[in-house]
Image 1 (cartoon, rainbow, N blue to C red):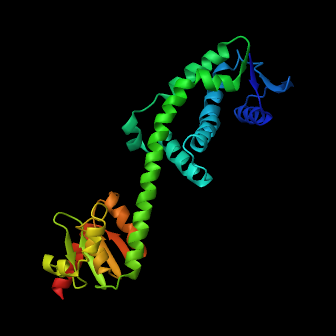
Image 2: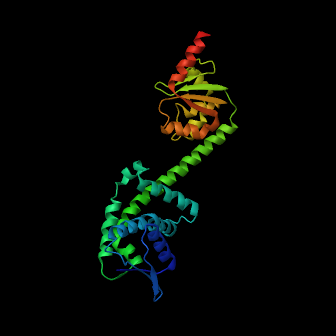
Image 3: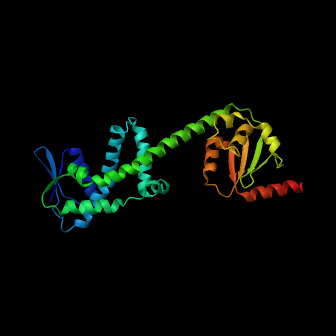
Length: 277
């Protein structure tokens, strides 16, 4: 069985990739094509199968996606394509399962294994580009479904970053209304001043900058983010036992070094200490 490549770059990458997997066959040039011959196919077939699958996943998939992003979706800035491809790869590795659930998990290993076995069982010469284009058509259609989700996620992340930057700018220009604010992030949410005295709704309402809610009603959380931005404290102590929730991530991104995250037990200790003085 012979595998033919149009470009020496592809042939060299392929050989180097297989060599790294302990497969040392060589390729030759014939009629402006580079031919890879599988001399030990019957002895090392399973190793060839796994190496080819890894080559498609690690090299050709990203190369194909990068080209689609550039040619079809018109992402001409390389950094943008890299960010989208990173999200896509995280979907394949299982790091972004919440995104995979939106489109359904694809059986990548099964799709590639079946195609690669058919390729290696063929007794003749095959152009690798043709194999990718025709035999892996269904595979790349499934990759496209993942890609569409990755693009949407990238756009949302860009919008989120713009939102965070806008609020950082607001905070930078806002005069601090409080030096220290303690926030107990439970239900109901409690705001306490630097003496650990509860701030009532009327006090918070008086400080609140209504422009935050009128200008950005969808994005600005009215129960925590808007009051804290309006107060613009020099230091925020936030008490929660669920630090991985999205709201915490947003608060960290906006207030950065101003905010410290502590467990809820800390605030009880502080309140008891104040009540004893």
